[in-house]
Image 1 (cartoon, rainbow, N blue to C red):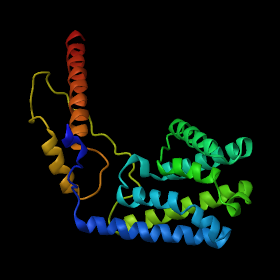
Image 2 (image 1 turned 135 degrees about the horizontal axis):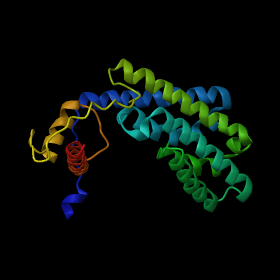
Image 3 (image 1 turned 120 degrees about the horizontal axis):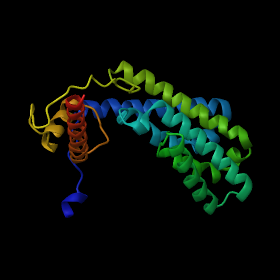
Image 4 (image 1 turned 90 degrees about the vertical axis):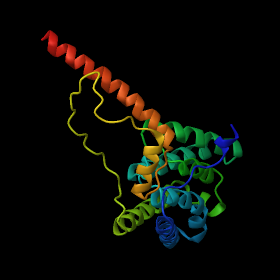
Amino acid sequence: MLARWFPAAINTRPSEWSRAAIGMALGTMFSVWLCAQVFGMEVALHLLGPLGASAVLLFAVSSGALAQPWSIIGSYLCAGVVALLVARVLGRTLGGACLAAGMAVVLMCWLRCLHPPAGGLAMTLVLADPASAALGWYELGAVLLGASALLACALAYNNVTRTRYPKGAVESPAAILVAPNAHSTPAIIAADLKLALAEMEQFYDVEPTALEQLIHAAETHARRRSIGEVLARRVG
Protein backbone atom coordinates (compact mmCIF):
# COMPACT_ATOMS: atom_id res chain seq x y z
CA MET A 1 0.00 0.00 0.00
CA LEU A 2 2.86 2.39 0.78
CA ALA A 3 4.32 1.73 -2.68
CA ARG A 4 1.38 3.60 -4.21
CA TRP A 5 2.68 6.82 -2.69
CA PHE A 6 5.97 6.64 -4.56
CA PRO A 7 6.09 8.21 -8.04
CA ALA A 8 6.52 6.06 -11.12
CA ALA A 9 9.74 6.27 -13.10
CA ILE A 10 9.80 8.97 -15.78
CA ASN A 11 10.03 7.50 -19.26
CA THR A 12 11.54 10.56 -20.93
CA ARG A 13 15.17 11.54 -21.42
CA PRO A 14 16.89 14.59 -19.86
CA SER A 15 16.94 16.20 -23.31
CA GLU A 16 13.13 16.28 -23.26
CA TRP A 17 13.15 17.76 -19.77
CA SER A 18 15.46 20.52 -20.97
CA ARG A 19 13.39 21.16 -24.07
CA ALA A 20 10.22 21.53 -22.00
CA ALA A 21 11.92 23.70 -19.36
CA ILE A 22 13.34 26.14 -21.90
CA GLY A 23 10.00 26.37 -23.70
CA MET A 24 8.12 26.99 -20.48
CA ALA A 25 10.51 29.75 -19.42
CA LEU A 26 10.44 31.49 -22.79
CA GLY A 27 6.69 31.11 -23.26
CA THR A 28 5.82 32.44 -19.82
CA MET A 29 8.25 35.34 -20.15
CA PHE A 30 6.87 36.38 -23.53
CA SER A 31 3.21 36.15 -22.50
CA VAL A 32 3.76 38.16 -19.32
CA TRP A 33 5.90 40.73 -21.15
CA LEU A 34 3.30 41.21 -23.87
CA CYS A 35 0.51 41.54 -21.31
CA ALA A 36 2.60 44.11 -19.41
CA GLN A 37 3.05 46.20 -22.55
CA VAL A 38 -0.71 46.53 -22.98
CA PHE A 39 -2.15 46.44 -19.46
CA GLY A 40 0.78 47.26 -17.18
CA MET A 41 3.27 45.21 -15.21
CA GLU A 42 1.09 44.92 -12.07
CA VAL A 43 -1.72 43.29 -14.03
CA ALA A 44 0.69 41.02 -15.89
CA LEU A 45 2.42 39.83 -12.73
CA HIS A 46 -0.97 39.06 -11.19
CA LEU A 47 -1.48 36.51 -13.99
CA LEU A 48 2.01 35.03 -13.70
CA GLY A 49 0.99 32.04 -11.55
CA PRO A 50 -1.79 30.67 -13.81
CA LEU A 51 0.24 31.31 -16.96
CA GLY A 52 3.25 29.51 -15.52
CA ALA A 53 1.11 26.54 -14.56
CA SER A 54 -0.41 26.45 -18.04
CA ALA A 55 3.07 26.59 -19.56
CA VAL A 56 3.97 23.34 -17.78
CA LEU A 57 1.11 21.60 -19.55
CA LEU A 58 1.62 23.20 -22.95
CA PHE A 59 5.36 22.52 -23.13
CA ALA A 60 5.93 19.46 -20.92
CA VAL A 61 2.77 17.38 -21.49
CA SER A 62 1.57 18.80 -24.78
CA SER A 63 0.13 15.43 -25.80
CA GLY A 64 -2.52 15.53 -23.07
CA ALA A 65 -6.11 16.55 -23.64
CA LEU A 66 -5.79 19.24 -20.95
CA ALA A 67 -3.04 21.01 -22.92
CA GLN A 68 -4.72 21.44 -26.31
CA PRO A 69 -5.51 24.91 -27.76
CA TRP A 70 -9.22 24.89 -26.98
CA SER A 71 -8.46 23.79 -23.42
CA ILE A 72 -6.39 26.88 -22.57
CA ILE A 73 -8.38 29.48 -24.53
CA GLY A 74 -11.79 28.13 -23.55
CA SER A 75 -10.86 27.58 -19.92
CA TYR A 76 -9.35 31.03 -19.48
CA LEU A 77 -12.45 32.56 -21.03
CA CYS A 78 -14.71 30.55 -18.71
CA ALA A 79 -12.65 31.40 -15.63
CA GLY A 80 -12.50 35.08 -16.56
CA VAL A 81 -16.22 35.50 -17.16
CA VAL A 82 -17.25 33.54 -14.06
CA ALA A 83 -14.74 35.27 -11.79
CA LEU A 84 -15.71 38.77 -12.89
CA LEU A 85 -19.41 37.99 -12.47
CA VAL A 86 -18.87 36.56 -8.98
CA ALA A 87 -16.68 39.51 -7.98
CA ARG A 88 -19.38 41.95 -9.12
CA VAL A 89 -22.25 40.13 -7.39
CA LEU A 90 -20.66 38.73 -4.21
CA GLY A 91 -17.62 40.93 -3.84
CA ARG A 92 -13.93 40.06 -3.73
CA THR A 93 -13.95 37.59 -0.84
CA LEU A 94 -12.33 34.23 -0.19
CA GLY A 95 -15.70 32.49 -0.37
CA GLY A 96 -16.43 34.16 -3.69
CA ALA A 97 -13.05 33.06 -5.03
CA CYS A 98 -13.69 29.41 -4.12
CA LEU A 99 -17.20 29.58 -5.56
CA ALA A 100 -15.87 31.05 -8.80
CA ALA A 101 -13.32 28.24 -9.13
CA GLY A 102 -16.01 25.59 -8.64
CA MET A 103 -18.38 27.21 -11.11
CA ALA A 104 -15.57 27.57 -13.64
CA VAL A 105 -14.81 23.84 -13.41
CA VAL A 106 -18.45 22.97 -14.13
CA LEU A 107 -18.52 25.32 -17.11
CA MET A 108 -15.20 24.00 -18.43
CA CYS A 109 -16.43 20.40 -18.22
CA TRP A 110 -19.62 21.35 -20.06
CA LEU A 111 -17.66 23.10 -22.83
CA ARG A 112 -15.00 20.34 -22.94
CA CYS A 113 -12.12 22.68 -22.17
CA LEU A 114 -10.96 21.48 -18.74
CA HIS A 115 -7.61 23.06 -17.88
CA PRO A 116 -6.45 22.89 -14.21
CA PRO A 117 -4.64 26.28 -14.07
CA ALA A 118 -7.90 28.01 -14.96
CA GLY A 119 -9.27 27.06 -11.53
CA GLY A 120 -6.45 29.03 -9.93
CA LEU A 121 -7.02 31.82 -12.43
CA ALA A 122 -10.63 32.19 -11.31
CA MET A 123 -9.52 32.62 -7.71
CA THR A 124 -6.79 35.02 -8.75
CA LEU A 125 -9.22 37.24 -10.64
CA VAL A 126 -11.71 37.42 -7.78
CA LEU A 127 -8.99 38.32 -5.29
CA ALA A 128 -7.36 40.72 -7.73
CA ASP A 129 -4.92 43.47 -6.82
CA PRO A 130 -6.19 47.08 -7.06
CA ALA A 131 -4.63 47.63 -10.48
CA SER A 132 -6.33 44.57 -11.94
CA ALA A 133 -9.64 45.24 -10.18
CA ALA A 134 -9.68 48.77 -11.60
CA LEU A 135 -9.80 47.34 -15.14
CA GLY A 136 -13.25 45.89 -14.62
CA TRP A 137 -14.30 43.82 -17.61
CA TYR A 138 -11.16 44.89 -19.47
CA GLU A 139 -9.34 42.44 -17.21
CA LEU A 140 -10.78 39.72 -19.41
CA GLY A 141 -8.73 41.16 -22.27
CA ALA A 142 -5.53 40.77 -20.25
CA VAL A 143 -6.44 37.16 -19.50
CA LEU A 144 -7.11 36.26 -23.13
CA LEU A 145 -4.03 38.13 -24.33
CA GLY A 146 -1.79 36.19 -21.96
CA ALA A 147 -3.40 32.88 -22.90
CA SER A 148 -3.16 33.59 -26.63
CA ALA A 149 0.48 34.66 -26.40
CA LEU A 150 1.37 31.52 -24.43
CA LEU A 151 -0.48 29.34 -26.93
CA ALA A 152 1.32 31.00 -29.85
CA CYS A 153 4.67 30.29 -28.20
CA ALA A 154 3.69 26.66 -27.61
CA LEU A 155 2.61 26.22 -31.22
CA ALA A 156 5.87 27.67 -32.54
CA TYR A 157 8.34 26.19 -30.04
CA ASN A 158 6.91 22.66 -29.85
CA ASN A 159 6.79 22.22 -33.61
CA VAL A 160 10.24 23.76 -34.15
CA THR A 161 11.65 21.31 -31.61
CA ARG A 162 9.96 18.40 -33.43
CA THR A 163 7.12 17.88 -30.98
CA ARG A 164 3.85 17.82 -32.90
CA TYR A 165 1.37 20.23 -31.39
CA PRO A 166 -1.58 20.39 -31.23
CA LYS A 167 -2.42 16.73 -31.08
CA GLY A 168 -5.27 16.27 -33.54
CA ALA A 169 -7.64 13.37 -33.55
CA VAL A 170 -6.07 10.37 -35.24
CA GLU A 171 -8.25 8.55 -37.72
CA SER A 172 -8.95 5.03 -36.53
CA PRO A 173 -7.80 2.24 -38.83
CA ALA A 174 -10.38 0.06 -40.48
CA ALA A 175 -11.76 -2.59 -38.18
CA ILE A 176 -10.50 -6.10 -38.78
CA LEU A 177 -12.94 -8.94 -38.16
CA VAL A 178 -11.39 -11.56 -35.93
CA ALA A 179 -12.90 -14.88 -34.95
CA PRO A 180 -14.14 -14.92 -31.34
CA ASN A 181 -11.61 -17.47 -30.11
CA ALA A 182 -8.67 -16.34 -32.21
CA HIS A 183 -5.58 -14.96 -30.50
CA SER A 184 -3.49 -13.32 -33.20
CA THR A 185 -1.25 -11.38 -30.79
CA PRO A 186 -0.18 -11.84 -27.17
CA ALA A 187 -2.07 -9.90 -24.51
CA ILE A 188 -0.64 -6.46 -23.77
CA ILE A 189 0.46 -5.87 -20.17
CA ALA A 190 1.62 -2.81 -18.25
CA ALA A 191 5.30 -3.67 -18.78
CA ASP A 192 4.80 -3.59 -22.57
CA LEU A 193 3.09 -0.22 -22.34
CA LYS A 194 5.89 1.15 -20.16
CA LEU A 195 8.45 0.18 -22.80
CA ALA A 196 6.33 1.70 -25.54
CA LEU A 197 6.01 4.96 -23.62
CA ALA A 198 9.78 5.02 -23.14
CA GLU A 199 10.27 4.75 -26.91
CA MET A 200 8.01 7.79 -27.46
CA GLU A 201 10.43 9.98 -25.44
CA GLN A 202 7.70 12.43 -24.47
CA PHE A 203 5.75 13.15 -21.31
CA TYR A 204 2.39 11.35 -21.20
CA ASP A 205 0.08 12.10 -18.31
CA VAL A 206 -1.11 8.53 -17.91
CA GLU A 207 0.04 5.52 -15.92
CA PRO A 208 0.83 2.23 -17.72
CA THR A 209 -1.50 0.33 -15.37
CA ALA A 210 -4.38 2.64 -16.29
CA LEU A 211 -3.62 2.10 -19.98
CA GLU A 212 -3.55 -1.64 -19.41
CA GLN A 213 -7.04 -1.55 -17.87
CA LEU A 214 -8.30 0.59 -20.73
CA ILE A 215 -6.88 -1.74 -23.37
CA HIS A 216 -8.31 -4.84 -21.68
CA ALA A 217 -11.72 -3.18 -21.45
CA ALA A 218 -11.51 -2.22 -25.13
CA GLU A 219 -10.52 -5.77 -26.06
CA THR A 220 -13.56 -7.10 -24.20
CA HIS A 221 -15.89 -4.77 -26.11
CA ALA A 222 -14.12 -5.63 -29.37
CA ARG A 223 -14.64 -9.36 -28.77
CA ARG A 224 -18.32 -8.77 -28.04
CA ARG A 225 -18.67 -6.71 -31.20
CA SER A 226 -16.84 -9.37 -33.22
CA ILE A 227 -19.11 -12.13 -31.89
CA GLY A 228 -22.17 -10.04 -32.74
CA GLU A 229 -20.93 -9.43 -36.29
CA VAL A 230 -20.19 -13.13 -36.82
CA LEU A 231 -23.64 -14.15 -35.57
CA ALA A 232 -25.28 -11.49 -37.71
CA ARG A 233 -23.49 -12.78 -40.82
CA ARG A 234 -24.52 -16.36 -40.09
CA VAL A 235 -28.15 -15.36 -39.57
CA GLY A 236 -28.05 -13.22 -42.73
